[in-house]
Length: 374
Length: 102
Image (cartoon, each protein chain N blue to C red):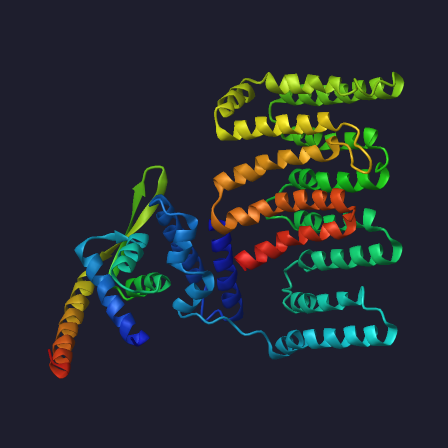
């Protein structure tokens, strides 16, 4: 994708500039970036796809070589340590395995290979925790699961990856934007730790996310209306459920929010427009399938869970369809993997009850991106 | 074909096509790659180097709501260089044909 390409090129040029200003001054760097941005835009204006343009311009490494610039070699001792790390890992793995008979989770020592490279590549103005977080998360998850059988809630440790990414944030991100971006992960952690056995109450905390998002609404009347409607709906839900013990009716107060939302002119007209477009058809079909599966199997039979617990997965076809329409080539595959992984995770979990092992499918997300983009 | 030799030929072709009409960067890459077997990522660096040497000048043309285009135009010194290069190339070709016969 364009920004990805330009970012990679800028990273390479910046590395050369920082190591050898004589070879590449800041002025020349900015001039090169401006020219490549220009070329990319010209290609787009000519109707070329991003893949075609990047084929024409060449990948950033080839661009550097074609410009006659030389990437600096890392200091020799750093290279040696990184090169040695696989052998050190093998020695440690074999030593612990042979002496103590502990092969799992000793295999985690192989994570020293990427971790060593990341630590030695660390630049003083960089954020070292963010790139290390996936490895810290995998290690913590495997150790907690293996020795304490805490696969749940240990999986929550993977949320440190997006949390650290958000905290590092792009320049210019406001405090409010960071809080909003963090809220789904913080709330997920809280709900799964405190309310895992009480979903009737626990799911309500997720409504904090739209409530917070509404603070970004500039129209004050609209903001207070929707926030008020959310609070009234929650109150109605709790009253019907806890006081009247009518959990079957408790979702009806939320119709207030739905009606308010549909009542907005721009929402209704965009929905009516989409009904005739493919996205609308996919949404409708997903809704019908969701209701059918849940209705046909509302309480589950034998060991099979209730249909409602997995029928919602059909809604993931909507973002998959949108991704397939709006992206091409590698970008399409990378964008689709989170949704495909989620579907695979729940299907593995429900069919084999291997929820712990099933989490490994989420590793396809970064692995796919690395294979296709790195 | 030796890369240094090929680079010289590609340079001459870049100057030639721009001498016929002003072109924007992506247009040069597209046209050249459709006519010659050339590694696409080498065209822009050649264009940039020739601009720095004064063979081309550049100007920007707004494109309405689309991003503006940067056009390359041959300079007087560029025309002189092109004439010399074409002369050298034709002489070289004639000599090669003489040596190999045909």
